[in-house]
Amino acid sequence: MSLEIDRASLLVRVPGAVTLGQLEAALSPEGLTLGPWLTDSMHSTNIADWIARGAPGAPSQFDDPADHLLAGLSCTLLDGRHLDIRPGPRRAVGPDLVALVFGAHERFATLDRAWLRVHFKGTQVRSTKVVVDSDPPISAEELTLITALERELRS
Image 1 (cartoon, rainbow, N blue to C red):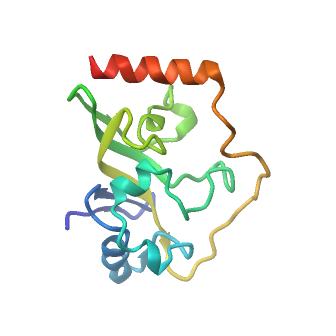
Image 2: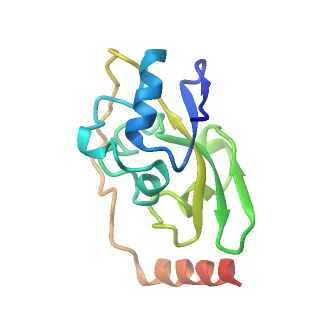
Image 3: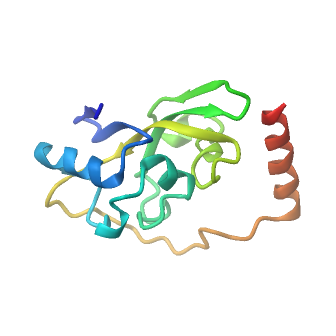
């Protein structure tokens, strides 16, 4: 398995085909983990599918808005173009192109590689527990925009 670990930033770059269990096994000798939320039932899920479904089981992005599970990614858009989003503070990099992949069920792109946040084993992950509806229903206007974006990427 090809892993690139950035210990200073606590990030790991991993292929989308790798399962969560394989990743956790590779991180363990490094003294790292995705987090205590990872359950045995999640181990057989590959990273690409997990990210496409919105990383079910992982802490909400609203639990700690300064932290992020998915720091960057490489993906293939529907029209075959390749997109790289390097790790960086979310609010410092312009439009949220990660949204083309995270939770989008491969509607716009397929994940090739992901930069995921890791933690040192045995350390408590801080959480601010912001209370907000993290999955509100899509409005008619949002659905129109999403459909137009999907149509454009397919052409």
